[in-house]
Image (cartoon, rainbow, N blue to C red; front, top):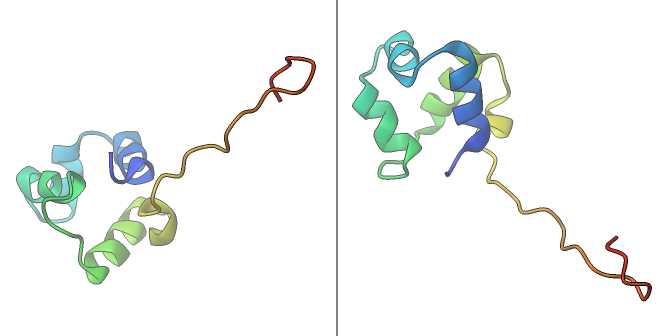
Length: 78
């Protein structure tokens, strides 16, 4: 998933279909962008941030894996 924060925020509002309609777009327009087949334009990112009420930077942040876990000398995971 390319934009987990964006997908989460859309789901809080309802369906992808409903959200796309709010933007005046089709569900396929949104789906192509969510899957990465088409990039979101900067103006689209800004509009989506305004509509959802979250900063576009957060909505479109790339997911980062958590830091690696390691075992201590006692065999306990830290």
